[in-house]
Image 1: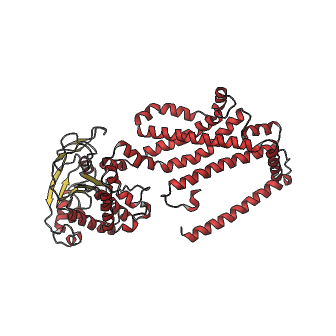
Image 2: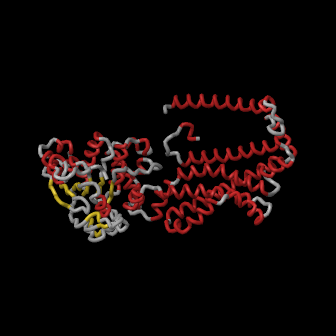
Image 3: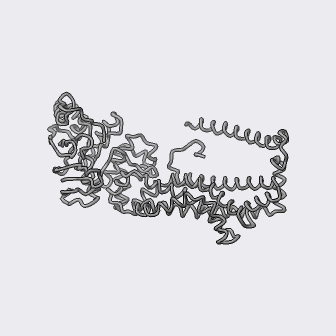
Amino acid sequence: MRFADPSGHGGVTAIEGVSFSIVDGEVVALIGPSGCGKSTLLNIGAGLYAPTAGHAFVDGELVQGPNAHVAFMLQKDLLLPWRTISENAMLGVEIQGRNRSECQRRARDLLNSFDLADFADHYPHQLSGGMRQRVALARTLAIDPSVLLLDEPFSAVDAQTRIVLQRDLAHTLKRAGKTALLITHDLLEAVILCDRVLVMSRRPGRIIDEIAIAIGHREDPFLRRQDGKIAGYVAHLMERLEIGPFATTAQNSLQPA
Amino acid sequence: MTHSARSTLIRRGAAVSVGLFLLFLAAWEWGPGLLGIPHFIVPPVSMVFKEFLRMLAVNNLLFHTAVTTAEVIAGFILGSLLGSVFGYLLGISPTAEFALSPYILALQIAPKVAFAPLFILWMGFTVYPKILVAVLIVFFPVMVNVLTAIRGIDPDLINLARSFTASRAQIFWKIEFPSSMPPLFASLRIGATLAVVGVVVGELVGGNSGLGYLLTFGEGQANTPMVFVCILLLTLIGGIAYVGVILLEHQVLHYMPARPLGGL
């Protein structure tokens, strides 16, 4: 697959020759330097942009535009300030015109499982950043997508909240058996949350490495954090990204895009 | 801000405000005399009040105030409706904005009140030219604010709606329209005061009704207190329109974080 931005000056090619697949129920991380086209890849998967060459398939169907199989979540919570928490969680359901009562029940269950039930009638500005991000996750899951595309979902929350949110996400993905593609700059996050990590090169982005994480208990990032193999995986990823003590070239910037 | 801190602020602020008002009235009443300013330049407040009572009895003041109020309301409502409709249309259609922007810019730069004599030539000494000036003057701030609001919406928010397979109409009604409410109301506040300006200019230029007419009538007779009465009533009309907008704003934007004194 290839994506060149037609409006870009000098025809910037964001990604080139990228090909990978994710099996049902698998959680895969995508890491790489800033501007390597990770988000572009995700937008193609969500059907927001069409690839210049190549195709994306979700559930065996060619992606020709936004579709109900896929839901995405970004670093920004994108909650609508004029909607209450439960109304925000229902946004996708409402747009897709699904069976309201069934979806309402699912949205309520999701809010319950994220400890947000007491805040259902609050407005977003009354919630903390971590809670807002959990509402965004509930909104993503409410439409019951088969694939979740997560673009640095926790990079804007503080470190402690992030640990809690990672646990919530891991639990939910495992329980619901969802397939997910997670973009992150946090190598540890990639290792503790995912079955597999894909490493991308600088622009034009290609996939240069693929590492299967052979640690059990994907639903419990707390437990995984304590596993002895974690350090080795992170060191390997650092090497592939040319950062840290193994750096051979100038230090890469790993700031969020 | 805590509740008690807030109520303390309100109480203290109100006390100072009332004190200042009494001080102002006293200065108005006795200041001109003390400074040797003649009454035909600055009449004391008691004289203005006496003139107000006289105008009520003799000059049909209530009728003229009602005419001006009606013109302001009509001009404000029509102007803000037109302004917001154009703002939304240009906001969702970049082609329309590109094609029409030179004309809109030209009209925006042109001093709107200068159209008043033209409108009176077209429509005679009726209420319509006054309303039309108000419509024209209210139109632009509303249109520009709505357009800017639509342009300024986070593209990720639109993409989020698109990823949920939202139609163009759904994106408008669920994202763009509600997003534009705060800037729309900011422009309506401006529009409420501008509508009074538009109407008064129209009345000054021609006609035989409204507070603007009484204003020129008082000027012709060198009746300074009459001019003051008209200015005060016009300010009152503008103030009521402004407060009306704010009350509506509180209804619509109830989800916004509370501001001290409701953001007056």
